[in-house]
Length: 275
Image 1: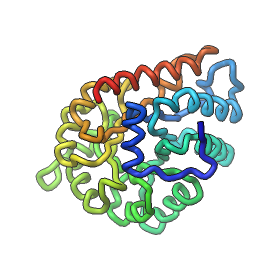
Image 2: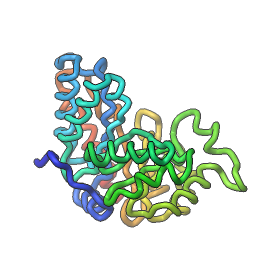
Image 3: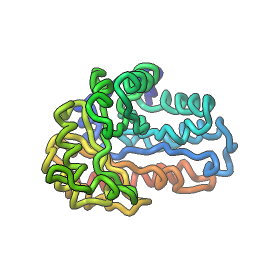
Image 4: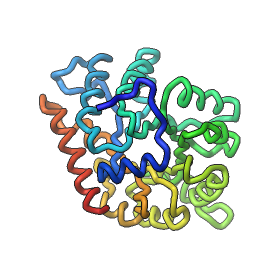
């Protein structure tokens, strides 16, 4: 098994190839919390690193992508950033490496964010918030062989505060998708859509038939893998379905690695049945 020291970028065709090879479109989320580590591990930075490495090893046969939620590491300051780097450098070369950072600011600030996550850190993709418009996303899109994953229709309770509002005769999330698609292409642009909104996701797929969708909300948040696949899969699958807590904390006992592997395998087996 190869793990990245200098990670190679994963483009669209390589991602599709991995999905077909593994018969899975699973994205494993590494939203690791020290206080939730199994008792057999030390509840500190080294325990977190060891846990992440073991989860990666246990799930790599079934995962085509990994998503690191940077907030879970940034909360610890410099040390947490280093733990995130250690985790990132253990990811297999052939998996898409996503920074779930939800960045987005004025152009020169976004340029610094883009350099941080695409140059200094070898992430393949980053989640971004589009509220500030094109100049806030453009610096990320200018990086070759990197992905921008734009928030569109999220699965959190407050999504309706803005996303479902009407704007120029369309829902705001529809306007976001329609506009952002003009700035990038299906080769460097994905959208976040929540699994708990299957009917709306079906309508989104009709809007953007060829873009990949990153789908949180399956499992712990109540989304149905079958429903979201039937609603939004295309010829290339076009989905990355994320599971974080369901895999990470499948067990808090000594068998946590085996439990994580079993949960990933279970999800992948269901995915394979839909391909």
